[in-house]
Amino acid sequence: MTHPRFLQIHTLTSYTAALLNRDDSGLAKRLPFGGAVRTRISSQCLKRHWRIADDPHALDRIDGATVAFRSRELVTHKVLDPLRDKFAEDVVDAVETEFQIAVYGDKGTTKKGRQTLLLGGPELKWLKGQAEQVAEQADGDAAKATAAAQAWRKDFRANIKSMRECTSLPAGLVTALFGRMVTSDTDANITAPVHVAHAFTVHEEEPESDYFTAVDDLAEEDPGADTIQDTELTSGLYYGYVVVDLKGLLKNLRRDTELAAQVLHNLLYLIAEVSPGAKLGSTAPYGRASLMLLEAGDRQPRSLSEAYRQACSPDIGAASDALVRKISALDEAYATGEERRVLSVCGEVDIPGAVHGSLAELATWVRSLPKRAAT
Image (tube, rainbow, N blue to C red; front, side, top):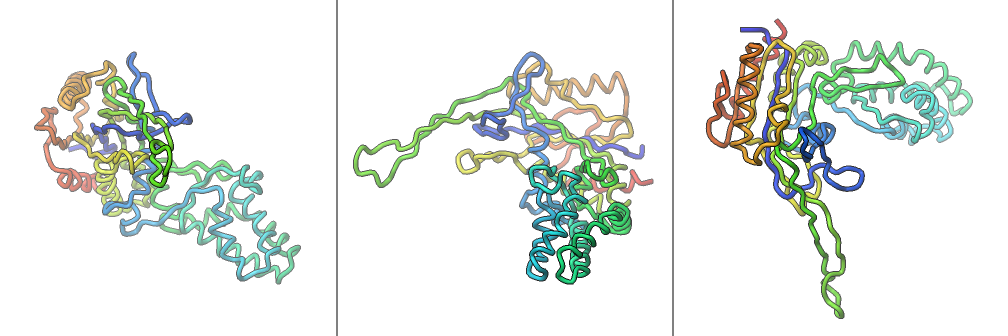
């Protein structure tokens, strides 16, 4: 049995009459593939819903998890605002200028000039403590506050690097999974061990323009539609693909195999059960994976999206058959020997070497992978 390096997660999930992910014009996102236009769900949309899911398997419910916040105003709201009741306003303002530059770079003095940054709870707590120390040195003098903050900024990178090295998950659990890029501090960059593809329909797009009205219940004259609008809805069977670099995950989690096991367990549930989508009140866009295939191996991952280059029938049976044909051909050509587990709610699918099971059984299996990957 090989020591697994990668976990690959393939899903087929159906949604009806929904608007899961919109573009800048308010229409469903699309993808031309194999000569046919498909409906698409972006990886960013998928990851956001997994990150913020209020769910029994939410990432923030994992023991040992630390929170993270994504914003252009982290320093403003999480570091400096808590100090404004304790120190003079001009002192805090003087400190803020230097802290914004330290965290966001030279253009960080304005909100527009900052990038949307992801920082973990431990990092923000450390920054708040540093800001408080600098403000205390000023003795109520804004000029002293500026000088003290400028002196602090000179050693910022070395000090925060030291803090990160001795703190468990300083950037938060979400960052350890999905990574981050910090242009103002390359040492803070974290490589994402969870790689998420854009999901797309296995068949040609199925759009519908939905005309709808709102009626004024209190109108005494000229009753009828008070508002007339239209929106786009789509239906589709989506292929989704996620790769977890197990060694990369362990590195980001400081070699904590128990934490990594719980992360994989919860992430699998989120991928299978948490739906992306807007217009919740008018479309109820909730669905669960009809098929989930897991593969663990030590070779470079490969998507099975090629199974759908030629658009297939919008049917789970046809999509499953296409998946089986593609994976069988790859096995014959490359013989990479992945271990497989599969969940199917539409009858048994004859995927070579795959052991069938429930979601709970698949989740139990993935929990074993981090320890095996660590050896």
